[in-house]
Image (cartoon, rainbow, N blue to C red; front, side, top):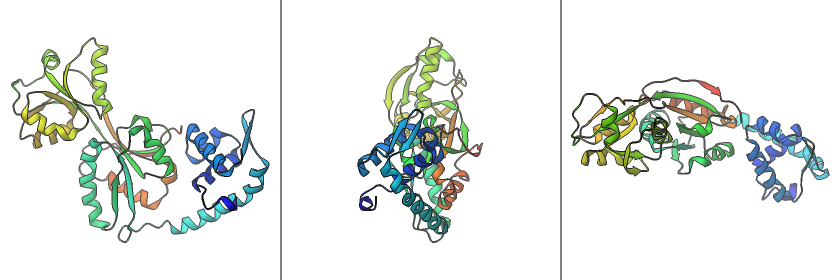
Length: 315
């Protein structure tokens, strides 16, 4: 193993340790907060880098090979020394830190969080930097598990299992009409809503689920334009008479930036929007990550909080 240390991924040694101690992929994953597919993928990478099978499956147990038994003592001892050293080094001082925190966010979450978060951070941590990573939501889990990202914020159903989470606020959808809309009613009849031309933001799964809910009732609305981002909505609503259905907190911003308009309650129930912050168990006790979470939790741009700091069911 010593000859391989120059090119081996040291994060994989934690996987080796967990498998050696637990002798089971599922239990090992639970020990370090990784899903079973991620554990299997990591084991395959470690096998390629060491040139040894490392563990063989017998029934439901994973037994170490002779090579794995020979190196296990040194690997476990080295990891313990690293943890001891890191515990002493894990004192985050926001006033002096130059740390870069990597965030995973939809454009919806970015609009709500980033401006206010940066303003708040600048007051106490002038050298701390933020980086919003532009990756697909299907990659969020792996990025958090590997430590490539510190925090994910959004309405992220795919992270409900296996991560700590902090509830930030709950919102509901409304219908937004721009300043050029011809409709002047004080309520939104269902027939009027269905016959209007609509804009759909495809980045938000809860917005898309509205059409699924209508379909279950045998109804459908006329989608004339699909856009990938909320950022385009103010310009669209300022120049057209189309309707758009968005969370209330987004509606206020769209109306303000479009130069007018109004919002009306919808004539049917829609799924709630739950904005939460998610982080991996490996970051739970990291003092810098704890500080970042406290910064996000106290943002004035988040209107209604249901804060909770607890692990969701581990996958």
